[in-house]
Image (tube, rainbow, N blue to C red; front, side, top):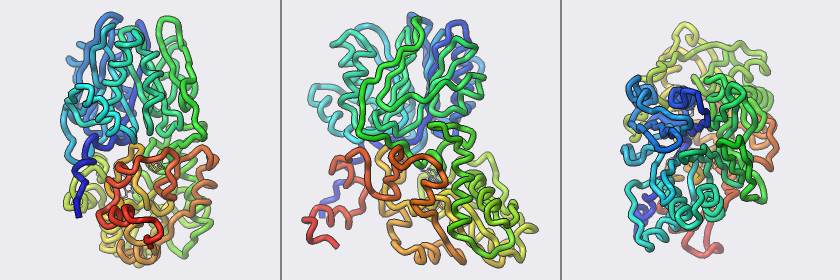
Length: 490
Ligand code: AMP
Ligand code: SF4
């Protein structure tokens, strides 16, 4: 059979990046953006960038690596201005190049424009082909470049960047939370489904900031004002803050994974503190999937609040059984399987005294490929634990994400490969395994179902995925199956 996988390799998936923006005449905007990005580091560790405007022209710096590696005193002091945007980028296979680092910068007939994107357009391939047919050449492989080129073209026609963005929002399909910079304005906008978070803050009563998560506002001492509404564009400039409701959608679809894993626990999204959502998931799990045990331990760090919740509700003692090396980035971003397996031991060490002879409940937020779980369970057993009962605060992750979380192909998801929990239990080597139910997830998080995207658990995608894009994340067997008429499928 013909393999089309290479056709879908471009533009590559965008992931849970972090975006920031500030309009703050008189403030040290580059340093504030730097600290904002620092707080958003968990959303992207591949590259970081800041673009500033002094009202007339841009200055920028983009570099591979963590925020503190990308910037030093001299690069920051070169970035003088009154307004800025910044970006931290998440890594994905084969795309660690500076050409993909953001914010992206381009010229239009009225000046310069910079764009920082979190999310993933599902119609990027189509839009890119359209632009290429018009003679556009692309430097990078990201959908964000497609977005920027579209904005430049529209701005050249309309003579106005906000008007151009409005025009583009009508054509973009998928997930996008953007910060955009012109010489005189910092702009934030969010797709009509509001898949990725984005919020507004105010600093010293005057400066206006935008950030993927509220934790970035807190770190610079800004007050949280509100979330950017789905389909809304907000413009911060000399006239203050202007809001335009550009697009509407039949429903909102905030990524539920932000509450489960992605966002920092101290961030508030749509009025819900992520820490509390995760603790609520632990309560729910303990209620629905109790077990006899001696101690409840988290897989640090994302499993922590749910493990605390599990211990609280079950009455079992909470303990630390795994010590994390904080200098290792999230295991998931290691590009190949061999490195991922090694990564578990590099990142986590068992506390023998706490585990020896114990019946352990190990709580974590999710199972994606199952590799980490298998490695961690082995570590706990080697440390002398008598039993290892795994409790997962999310339901089985069965469907790939097309809206900005890179989980690669469906065939790599352990819950897609095995439909029975018992088979997954055996595969990861646990004594028992229980996932959160979908109802438990909603109850624990405490956000209404109609506001959330749950597609990686249900396979029901709120924003339609073009057929060719959908096929790109299915394995060969499934692609063949999808190409045959529905009635012949299993
Ligand atoms: P595994 O047991 O190998 O499936 O690894 C799952 C772990 O990866 C979870 O404990 C999460 O902390 C983390 N994780 C879940 N989703 C993602 C994601 N999209 N990107 C990076 N890490 C993730
Ligand atoms: Fe989030 Fe899953 Fe929806 Fe992707 S498919 S946006 S990870 S809930």
